[in-house]
Image (cartoon, rainbow, N blue to C red):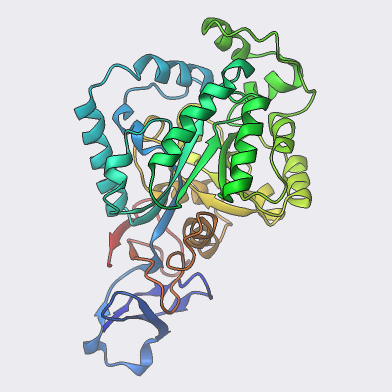
Length: 391
Ligand SMILES: [Zn+2]
């Protein structure tokens, strides 16, 4: 049995233990977290720093890893997507696969044990099938014109059926890229198969403008793509409130980004939906729009919060710790145990991996991260903090 100790243990299922000891069975499962004074120091593995369960990256696009450093920062969402469309056929298969493999290694080194991973293609499937990390694959569908709903859905369905196991969903990309008709098809399939959904929400002001007044940069964007928007009428409401009624109220839904979600909307969602989860990807928000969500508004409404890296197209690292640092620097009052709960337990619960991951509880094998170079007195991370994986 391994007996591992550090300055603080964060079991997440219970409060942090100062100089606690994590007991690990020979099969790698957690036995318990106990106080240090019942052991001789010589029988312990002693570390400086904080010990946490492995991290869950609730939102990533592994397949876009080849776009690292290829797209300029702070251009806004519409220019960002335009650039992705321009670049997506510029790279060969080998480059794409190599980038996927390297990115997975980076996530493992950064203490990530599970990922909610978006796939528009099958490019990441070969790497994901090796199960170095636990994945839930969201096969993401797009098609804003109602005429393409049938084809888009059937393509998604073919991919869905090609993946073994149950860690998979067919999911809508976002309000501005999925028609009501396509939402309905996904809704029926999700109801039948009882899987979680993940939707990009309010990542830009223009997304709201499109729905509220049929104005903004997305109109120009669709014009350039020769997609006729005559079918589309403004709803006079935000994008979130326009599309959420297309989905069953009891669905488990992850709303990703929420950069421009208002406190009133958060409150309304929390009052009307029991199973909505929220995902922050702060580094991607800074990369694309140079804006961050109002973290405290979500906390005040007791939202179930998770953390994601988004893709390397809009990030320079796939590190949950890096994301937590941005949140902590923006809002230093958020306790470390709260941030770590978002990064571990909540992500594991949303992705339905909570039986094995997310907390240091008996029988689980959640991975073990050591956060080094920390502020022990203030129980905080520092900008220089980094991860060493212990399990
Ligand atoms: Zn994304």
